[in-house]
Image (cartoon, rainbow, N blue to C red):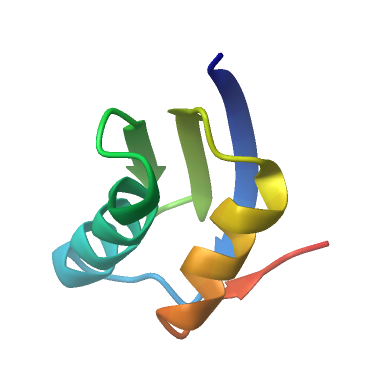
Length: 67
């Protein structure tokens, strides 16, 4: 079952960042739909992964997930 998770992520500023975050989430859930808004720092993922796994995947790429 998928849910939509919205996070504020600091440190993203280019297309590489978008790709890194997207691929990190999709590594755990290949069917995840990920949208990144660089201007606001918002990441929206519709995924079967629990929120904590999404946050961990993003942090492992070197980005800061706001609480």
